[in-house]
Image (cartoon, rainbow, N blue to C red; front, side, top):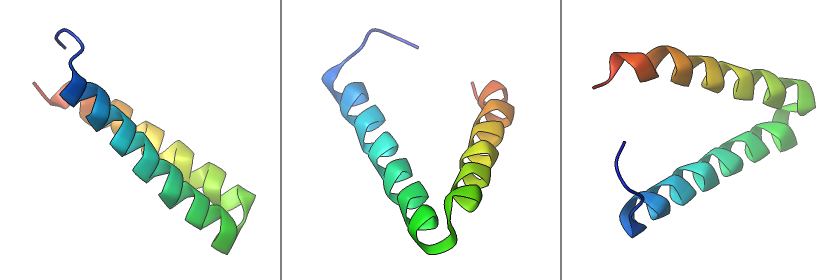
Length: 54
């Protein structure tokens, strides 16, 4: 990782906002249990894919 820049801060905010919209949509359409499972699945995928990227 490098020093925090405006571009990286905006990217993190945009991606977190997108995740919030997606998980919010899952919550509204499918319920809290589906939103929890979707969030857990996304967290697991990030933890598995993260170490594979340079």
